[in-house]
Image (cartoon, rainbow, N blue to C red; front, top):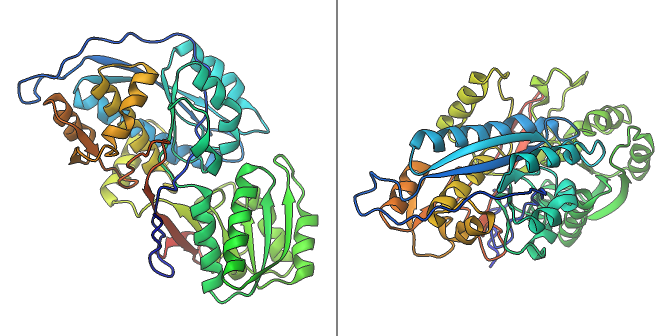
Length: 424
């Protein structure tokens, strides 16, 4: 069932959310203690587990701006799970995924393998996940991604070991295509990254926009690792479209000035999750002009102030600069909590055992007790009940494919300060 609400509101769909997770080849496995639920009101944990968790997130590369929010989400969740002392202690190993051009993930996989992780959060990029998922499955490692959006992961032969907490490109492409049409534009040009992420979004933006009566009059792709985009901008300029969609990662920092110089003003631009960021607060962005009027989409609901405050306190407390935006932070946080709850419910730290409980603790079984924190959910499990975790990214509720059954896409607009404001 697909449910679409409002003309410009975040679109909420059931059964479409996707994230492509990074697969990690890991040798070894941790022991599985025999655990029985306690009979005494949750004061005694149902198990005493040490979960070796890995994270593979972009500390460098074309998605490095997503590193701080996602790593802060993972780190905060790990600290709160460990503080709860409810039967699961997480031993985290964090490594850099880089991107498909730098291939930092190749070295990181070896490090994670040496650490003996049985579950990982990552990768951020669908392209990286596609390269390593099969190895992860072969090693029996559970993988959960907070940001991969490739639709093909739904049907991946993953032996039930792959999950994600963010929606697929099918949903984001439809939301953005509708937004462009609702703004009254009749013609559209698209610059997009020539990989699974870029082509998937391009296809869905195009089909939605043209289904609404518009026409894509020009499109131009580029390859990951390219540094020159003059030809792509010239192709778009020649068609003189009403609006331009830019489907990229941080290549947007180079593409944007070219569009501006070509006379295509920012109020005609539409961005996606891979490049939507608060550029006004980024010291490495040399925009000499305002992005005011540009719009974009990215997955996730509006975050509560308490959660963002906790993220910021954790991240800066580790000696890092402040987080400038929180894209996929909630999805990363929820990924860790769900893995920890599934481990507790299984009484095991084995990847396959944890995976077998992921649908249950997310509410997929339909008979759990609602809870909104690891501590509260763990108490339910320790009391012998079934927990149904609803997190900061939404209800999640995994289906049999490891996809969340409902998700939201927010729409955003830039102000004169080059910062984004959520419009709904």
